[in-house]
Length: 214
Length: 214
DNA sequence: AATAATTTTAATCATTTGATTAAATAAGTT
DNA sequence: AACTTATTTAATCAAATGATTAAAATTATT
Image (cartoon, rainbow over all chains, first blue to last red; front, side, top):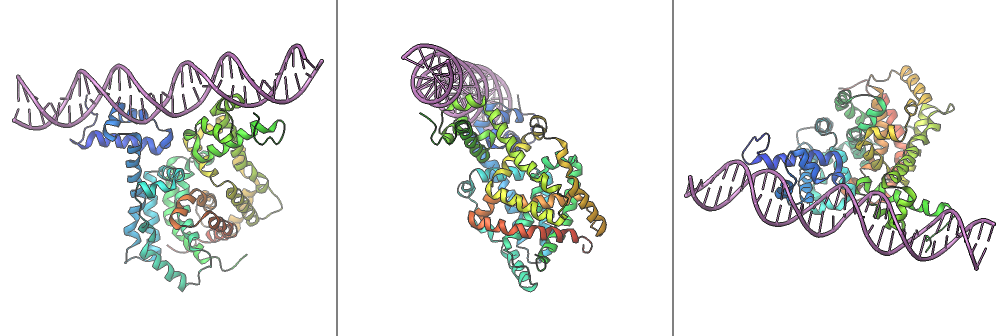
């Protein structure tokens, strides 16, 4: 028998297994995923998985690396764009991320889980180089802005946390939020679409706060 | 042989196993935790774990239930307090949560993971009743405030998401944040202490935004 | 068509892992 | 002390699971 939907000559089986693995891994995590789950999900035999990828761990690493790249490298272009303002970058970045997260809602949990399990592994094994964290041009714009407006004196790491928190956390908490509030996936996604416009406004509001008050 | 540090007559062994289980489960999650890990962590024999708790799953459920209670029920008193303003409640709640999270930094990932794995399980198996979500008095205050100040027209669920996001996410992302920024646990905790004061201010700023712009 | 190379499968292995059992030790009662 | 109960352990089981192997089926090449 041949694979169900053989689209292309070579790409088919290997790619189908990888897609199945991606679905199962991102849904259940590494430890809870059985190689047999991937076999069943892909429609192929168990041995095929090992034939193509040698081992569960190797397959996982491939999936993980692709995710990390999606997660991290996609922002490089935006962040280094010389022709957009800080506020524009924020809008584009957040909009971009929310789009991606609507497509892959359990990506954050997946990535964070594995980072949690072994924070050093990504750096060592998957070769995430330190250059990523520089955020060159956006950081420069940030400091300019911080100097111009008498920004509150709190650590800029707070702002990074805030942006990431407001953007990503709703997806992480989605099952709980939906369970508690009763809203369904469609309604949830509408809220996320709203946040594309709202979060940049909120971030600006946060940046302008901090002068007054306790 | 007897258990290492027998503090009290009855409490000792069972409690020691539970504490060990809590540590291992919250660190590695259910699937990745071996009963043998708990045995080793507790210093007791493998069979003891099953002697006291029948099965891995039953032990897990006990741990989980306790965590959920810590996570949820602790806020009921604060939320229903007739003598505090909305802003005060926010401050108290956030401060309370951050204290708890500094003590148990990997609690959010643990809970969210298991909720993700089976959102219905907590409701069914652990009997989380719907009454929790009411947040009676705080919600009343919220609506009053929303009516008084011409609050922005966005869904109040956004505000709930924002409060929870800003408070909890930094702990979830902590390993990644620390890995990327190079700050250590102590420095991270100082930032979290700062957020006790900052988040309520930011929330207020967010509430007051949304009129102008865009 | 015949042969070689690739792809796929069924059957099987060796470990791991959750759980049980029966025996040993300790503690409490009479 | 004698007996009963509670606690702890070593040894072992059965199922699950990651991985391998050898053969069958399919495709490509001559």
